[in-house]
Every structure is written in structure tokens, then in C-alpha cells.
Amino acid sequence: MLDKILIQKKWISAILAGKVLLLLALSWLIYDRIWVQQVETGYLDHFLAALSNGKLAWLALCVVLAPINWTLEVVKWKKLTTPFQQISWHKASQSILAGITLGVLTPGRIGEYGGRLLHSAEGHRSSTLYAHFVGSLSQNIPVFVFGALGVSRYFSQYYFANAFVANALACILMLLAVFMTLLYVQHQALAKWLIGFKWFHEFSRVQAEVAYGNTTLHQVMILSLLRYLIFATQYLSLLFLLGMPVNAVEGWMGVFVIFVFQTGLPMPPLLGVVARTQLSVIVWSVFSTDQLTMLVVPMILYTINLVIPSLLGGLVLISTNIQKQISND
Image (cartoon, rainbow, N blue to C red; front, side):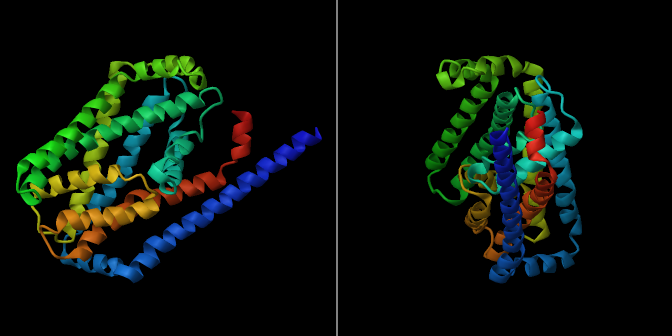
């Protein structure tokens, strides 16, 4: 009994320490995104000045699309978890927000997996992790397909005199997209292969629980495609808001290039936003010399799509009785 009490106290202390660290990390996130970046770049002043140009509709479009985007992710998550666990819209939304928070603070957004476990019942956690893997795979496929198209057009026109290099790079990206598509469609074969390793024996149960039919896989892929197009539209709307001199086609191609390369940068988004801004400068510098605008767009997009939801997710994690949930599930 005494050992059980001591273990319980250690759990409480660990969870409390984790929540304090989370609160500190989110506080730093706000400080860094708003104060530090403003002091170093003046991006907020530049953004507020741009709002006086009468193009507020572009900002409204970007803001309105953000909750639609995450709602689509909630729908997708419910479709992926329904075969093995019935989860309410409220709990699915909390899992998504918690995943965003932990993802923002970890390399390669690996923390998202932990967030998806927030309302996962005991006995189904391996299936939950696998479902998130399938969902992430579906989200990356359009990134590489459209990225290949963007690289082929953009680099052949603006960076390489010889289109062969650009098309070769585009082919590599398309091959990766084909590989991911095959893995997505044949994910059951992957689960079956993993069962052969002693660490993955429980995948025999996981394989049965995530036996998604073609209809589910098609629906999940459509939702992922819609989310990708929403991201791209948000980016393009901010470019137009801030007066970047690009037409729609050039804008789409540049955004596709940025998205595919930033996907391959496995670093914490706290540092990754720096990589995003540098990518933005590289891509848009062929159209303009206004580097501040090139920096502002990814920063504002990052704030709308990740910082704000991560704060909501932080509230979810801090207010959730993690120990009780682990014990009860």
C-alpha cells in the first residue's frame, strides 16, 4: 500500500512538473513570437501598416479558413479512430489541440502523437498512434505531389538555366509521393510486416482495428487535400494582403515549393519558423526586394495556424486530469 502511495505521489509530481514546464514553454512562445520578433524585425508594425491598404478581405479569408482547417482535421481524426474507438467531437477536438501544442514544442512535430493519446482508451493506444501515422501520411502526399509540380515550374524558370536539374528534382519528389501513396494504400501490409518483430507483436490486434476500407482511405485523403489547399490559400492571401507583386500562378508555385521543403526540415517549429522565413526570402526574392514582407507572411501564418491553437491546446492539457484519465482508461 505504501509503495502504491509513493508511486502515485511521484506521478502527481511528474504531471505537475510537466504542466509547469508546458506553461513556461507557451509563455516563451508568446514572448518570442510577439515581443522578440517585433523588436528584431518590426514585423507587427509592417503588418499593421499593410492593413490600411484596403485589402482586409485577404486577412479575413486567412483567419476564417483557420478554424475550417482544424475542423477538417477533427473530422479526419474521427474517421481514423471510429473503427476501434467512439470518440465525441469535443474529445476529438481536445486531442487535436493538445497535439498541436505538443507538436509546436518538439522536433518534427513528434509531440503530436502524444496529444492524440489524450482521450485514447487503454488497449487502443497502439492503434491510436498507428491511426495518426496513417493520417500524417495522407497529409504529406499532396505536399510532395504539388511540391514536385511547383519545383518543376519554379526552379526551371527562376533558378536553373537548364530545366533538366529542376525536373530531376521534381521527379525525386514525385517518386517520394508515389512511395507514400503506396504505403498509404497498402498500410495493412506494413502492419503485417511489423508483426514479425518481437517489439511489435501486438500489431496483430492493431492490424485488425485499423483495417480501413477504400471508402475511408479516400475520404481521409480528400480531407487532407482540402487542408493542404487551405494552407496554400492562406499563404497566398497574406501575400496579396501585403502587396507581394506575384500573380496567382506564380504565387501557387512558390507556396508549393516552400511547403515541400519546409516539410523536410525536422526541427522544432520554435526554430522552424526561422527556416520558414528564410525559405520565404529565397523563393520570393525573384519577384521583390521587400524582405520584410517575405518575413512577415510566414510569421503571421504561423501565429494564426499554430500559436493560437497551441495556446488553446495548452489550456486543455493544463486543465485535464492526466493521472485520472490514465487510471480510468
